Image 1: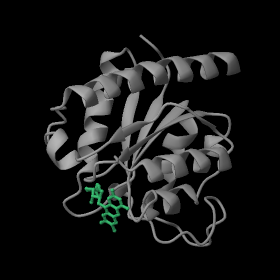
Image 2: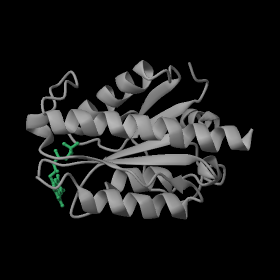
Image 3: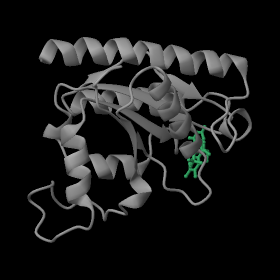
Length: 187
Ligand SMILES: Cc1cc2nc3c(=O)[nH]c(=O)nc-3n(C[C@H](O)[C@H](O)[C@H](O)COP(=O)(O)O)c2cc1C
């Protein structure tokens, strides 16, 4: 059992979204792999306005942002899960992250992209890795791409294709190694 505190950020708030199925399943698999302190941070819960300033410098109080900041600051490692919109990650993910900065520094971050297309949001995944670098964090080289999400994963998170099941397992295994290596070095 690991004490590492993993926060999976769900970067889709679309009505009728599909990406939540991926975060549900990832959380289950991290728990099964011994990472019992894994939680999903659902950006739909926050409904943050367009960022005008960073956390702590915002002139007006924003509902829920203190809670989000506390969760981020406590986290040891993150997984960013985003749909691909127009060849990139979601605007809601970027807007959320722009409120923060230090909360991510020197932390391991894995990226997961989701799409109804056959390429699994590969452009979004690559751009998320660049985003992770810009946050001063460490992007895990191996990423998880989830193609044709509307067919390949059920509402409960059941993965219906063998190749995708294998890729979920590889991602969780690699992230377990990557996060443990960085977090234990820092301590
Ligand atoms: C504004 C918008 C842009 C999209 N752009 C892309 C795209 O560039 N590539 C792609 O594969 N799918 C694209 N899609 C389809 C998404 O992959 C699909 O909506 C998927 O379900 C996204 O996850 P979500 O349901 O959580 O929003 C787009 C969808 C929306 C709403």
